[in-house]
Image 1 (cartoon, rainbow, N blue to C red):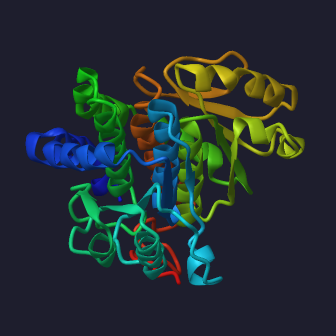
Image 2: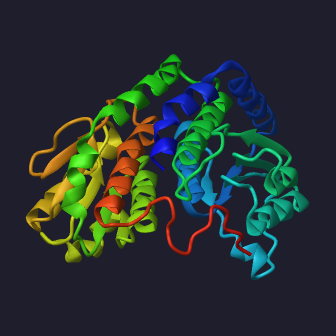
Amino acid sequence: MAADIAEQPEVFARLLAGPARERIAAVAERIARRRPRHVVFTARGTSDHAALYGAYLTEIRLGIPAGLASPSVVTVFGARPDLSESLVVGVSQSGGSPDLCAVLEAARETGALTLAVTNTPGSPLAAAADLAVDVAAGHERAVAATKTYTAELLALLLLVESVDGGPAADIDDLPGLAERALADDTPLHLAARYRFAARLVTTGRGYAYPTAREAALKLMETSYLPSLAFSGADLLHGPLAMADPDVPVLAVVDAGPGGQSMRDVLARLGERRADVVVVGPEDVPGTAARIPVPRVDERYAPLLDILPLQRLALAVALARGQDPDAPRGLNKVTATL
């Protein structure tokens, strides 16, 4: 897991290089010509969080309604929604889950344009789709997905930005910024804070919400620490009642509208005397500590914010005496029906 985490700047550089970037731009051109009225993402596990990021990007950057499909609608209930004016995107590290393939096949039957975003170009998911994007993360050794997740994020970012005319030049700074984010050892120092925690809450809004969900998943699958992920807004609608000094909170607070909207959430957590650690580019008054990340445009932040949280999950697992490379009951490829 540590080796996979460390490779992410290199993965970013590879995706941003000429051939990979040109292939994504060509897919984006096909999508732009089709002019879909809706974008529907389908995914499982870690890739579900990348898909959620893709949905935020699609609605904010392109102004096209986007959402996440429930594969069971097709595979369990046998429904065939009319997706004739939609782009349907399957996101999967392995591309091997039968339910995602079934969603893309059903979507094609109703006239949708379909796209597979995967780290396995020859996978069944890629074969089921009209178009395919290879995230080019290389072989991932650990069961817990790290570099394939951020590669999916970057591939979706490049795709959406290319549909919108092309990414800004500052996107090429991401490999160096990722190196900076991984060079800070604050996550290792904070791991002892969560060694004996009974449960933990992660939270963020907008682009940061997928990061909160992915961080919670990484903590659960590597150290078995029950972790609940909420959007900052949803946290105030009931779950805030469980906040107290014994329930630590990891809050993703970036520079931008989403991060600014978290200030009221953090104030309310402060009233509950919750132990809040912020992941972000600047200190927030009233919080216990901060895991620093470089300041970037908010839409880029998920590619950097998750990096120290992956290292934190790894360190917490080791502190709790677990083997993060062999989570109990898990396999690298999970085939759901």
